[in-house]
Image (tube, rainbow, N blue to C red; front, side, top):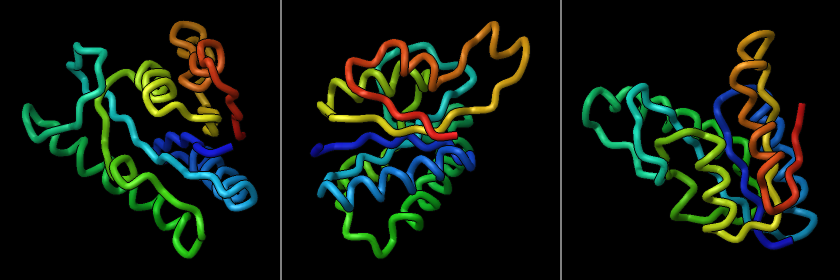
Length: 145
């Protein structure tokens, strides 16, 4: 297992998933691809784009940087290698679609991600990001609760 994709959203479950990914990467000598995907309110394109400072997305970029930095703190001191060009990249778009795009683009061996606690009607209507990735991924997906 050479590459593990770990999308983090700032939730406790995503950071738990990162800790599991760190442990697996240490055991197998894997590279972690750490990414945060932000969904702007008025996002139309399905192709990943780095978030800029146009149309109020500066706040989104600041939030994403905080989340990435929290993830990097979890990996601090670990011998795990992190893909440099993605470790601080912030991608805009629908999270499940962007994760699926990255799975293929980066040719990862596995995805490790946190479950998200959507509840009731919202889960029924929208589904969760982790469920969509699990259903459509061409690679193994580990969901951490």
